[in-house]
Image 1: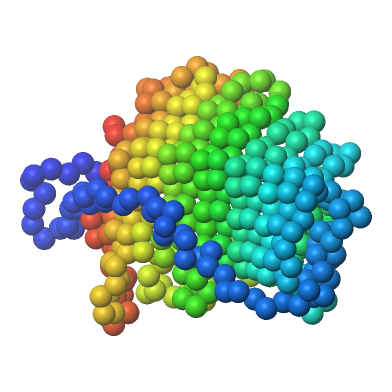
Image 2: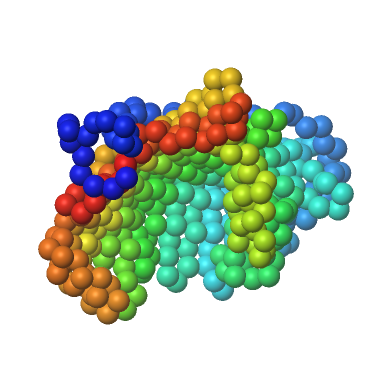
Length: 370
């Protein structure tokens, strides 16, 4: 049903949707992710550990791409001080690198967990500094990709980084206190965390405090992107993988919906807070949007709600296509656009039904869908 709705809406017609109350979803603390980094101790012989290090380029200082001031440890667990890699494309320095459970899987080297602190990557265009980076339970292909990326900043464009997506993966990753200084972008990210439980196929994710200045290469216009936080708890990793597969083959979308269990809870909760984008031409502000899913018996109830999205038009953009959209909105006398939405979905496996309750999509002074 479409149109304005008031107190006179009564009778046997369609039910008028009510606003879904705002959800108070907190950003998860770091303690939520600690369990994902638990790695059991692995018994590794010194010979196997050294073979794995050699394959990763970490056996002898200066024999490959890496040099270091000091190396200690044995039997698969090693600590490096002032680990450095220099190439024509840039320099990577790591104040401290810790490798745990270095071992061989067949003829391929990998490790159970790696921790890097005081990480700095520099080339002619950008400098990236990272306070700490941790990765746990990477696949062998991912472990190789990480080390290749650290020893050669250009290797993301080379064939040796093009690994099969089916072989890519890790149990957990955390990156803290990132600063970026470059010609096209500069700013900071407080932290990024991801962790998956292989036994339940559930994952947790969060990213906090993005503050980036993005400089247009041609016009040199500066856009400011900010995000207070984005998090999700209890995401189904099998659905994530199916989603990634959509773009990889012509039948991806059909297969995705064919394999999807529509009655399965997609997540426990998610929360987006403080997303904004601002430049000389437009200001976009999304204060918060969140959702939660609860299952009781055969019924899963998914609730989503948030504050209105506000888009403010400023100066006319220089880009021709953007200018056409800008002029059209101006002709319709839209200097500011406010959009809000909320809904409750009820998935009932027992009755084989999906019902939408209190679904609202509204643009102020534009339309209202119930």
